[in-house]
Length: 505
Image (cartoon, rainbow, N blue to C red; front, side, top):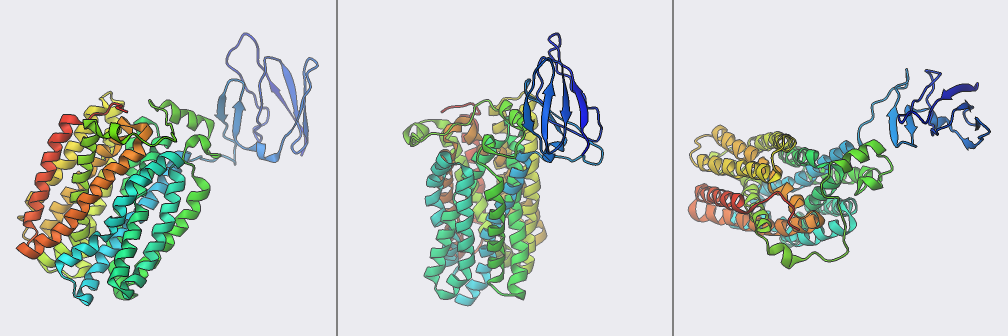
């Protein structure tokens, strides 16, 4: 390639560097000094700088012909658009949140598969409603034990590694579920408990990674987008599972979703880091933008989190009670919705799946909207305490009213409307207590998430099993729906009294 001559000027009187490019077909990387010099470039060969007796040499590769100009003396990075070579660079944090949304979708889809498959299994094996609740809750037996440990591991080792191990193990458990169901009830319960054990790290890992990768004014939207994937997992699982069960067989959906988990893992391991400062792909300008938007820089500690101190403050208990209530209502609807439509309105399994799937789809959209509203309120100058209380109040009073109205539904269509309203409004909690853990305890957020999630999982076990017993004893879902609505209202009052958006620990 022929040599090209380029001229770069910089003077003592000007504090702002000026970069000139003589050829519109080339782009190069330079370091500026306060000297006038002329640069001769021969790609793939050595470069000689000559001015006032100053000479230096370095290698220039053809890769340097990309569209970036760096004035490193001033720490400024600029991109020059070259005709025929212009590209749009997607910020690395967007890639991270996209992968996070995908894995959260798989996380929930893997759970939902069993909620649908359990209906034909119960008919085949003659399970009662009370025992059906035990089978449904077996996932939570392992989930409750891993939440605290998983949260502590995330704080110590970072979310990337912990999430990767979690996905690998729960994909294996998903793959083994059909074998366990054919082998024995005990094997099925054990595999589902192991599955829950592996999935217990998902939410703490998500919360911690997003807090590292996103500035404060974008964090609610990032969580909303990731949780949208989580809720879409319900839609995917509820729609695909009955189709695959009836056309291919009971093993088909389990094999599909476990394979997708391993495929996702191959991208995650090589493209994501726990902290943006460790990423080889992120640009300096994006990293600066992320760090500038943080009020509390992330820290890691090898010390075990102070449990006594964490539990001594009422804002911690506000988060715990909010998680308890959220999981109570969420798992009642997740585990029992197909059974509810089949029992109350006598719809078949495929119809029940469609009625159940629609509310989760709207929840995915409303969750992202809630995050965007939360971020806009923070940018507008509202305090985090005020924003968290507003979002959480909507997230609990809305579902409470909707569940009370559900008792009076006379058709599956009307029931779907009320359930849709309940789930859509409950997604506002994602911009409430789910973000509040990073607000009050950024250093121990993973561990605090584990504590709250364990308490919420215990509530989910009680509500999932309790629903079965209530239905068996009373012959309807109404009493349990009313109890759940009351719990929503009580927790809303407690949250508004004691929650805060300020750092406590």
